[in-house]
Image 1 (cartoon, rainbow, N blue to C red):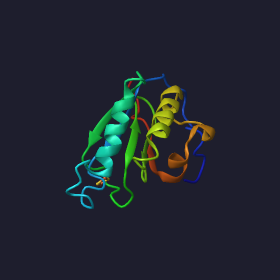
Image 2 (image 1 turned 60 degrees about the vertical axis):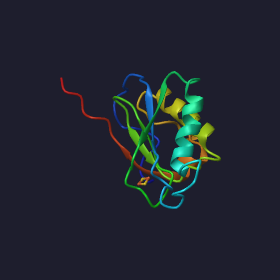
Image 3 (image 1 turned 45 degrees about the horizontal axis):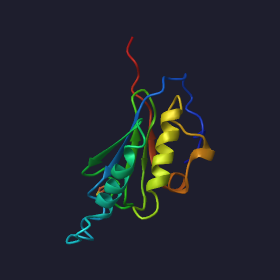
Length: 137
Ligand code: FES
């Protein structure tokens, strides 16, 4: 990413829980008969197994996040915060780092974690970030 990606450029917003969307279709075509499921399904299972320890984090599966060329694709989303779409997550390597990054997103008033709180998958894999919906007064 370029520009001032370490700052959100908006007024602080309230803290809120974070949903981690995991594309369970990622890797399905390459592993149609795998008993463990696709890479995305394995990542979803690994994150779901650990999520109970993180009350501010919800893990949700999704069929496709339209970045199919860089599996496994995940997204962080929270009300009133920036969202991130991130590709290249590895189910065998990144589950702990994904939960740590989601915790950093939850703790950030804008959903923009400090650079030091971004694990390698986050630093290497960001596809885009999306601003929060404007509030209507
Ligand atoms: S199959 Fe995972 S992003 Fe499309």
